[in-house]
Length: 128
Image (cartoon, rainbow, N blue to C red; front, side):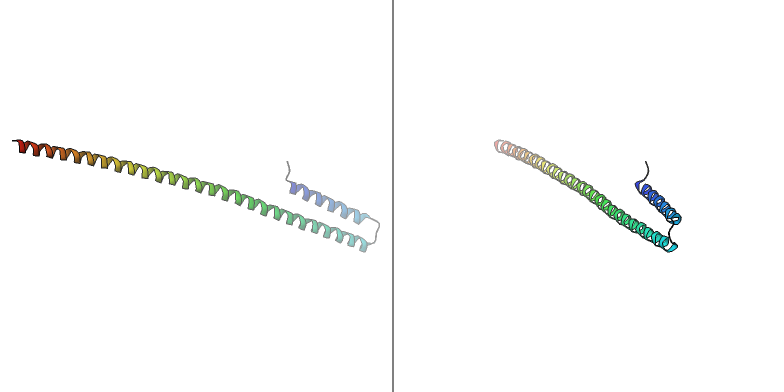
């Protein structure tokens, strides 16, 4: 499949060549032929300008859309990373709190056992 721009350019060049040959072979005065050729060339230039402006506009729109898509994907990735970070921080806090609770419980258990042992020794000393 051919590029549409190349097809349009080939059609314009073919039309220009055909028109130029037709004007050159027409039974008119040289001045009239030259004016016709000048008008035709001016029309071609105007058509080329219009096509260039249209293509520029299309490229700007395509670039803007591509930028918006990339920005959206990047923002989504940033949000996902932020959510993952928050989850990791919450999980780490929960683990720290669990470890602190376990340490506190073990400390209280050891403290109670030491107090019980001290009371047992105190009672055995007083009873002897």
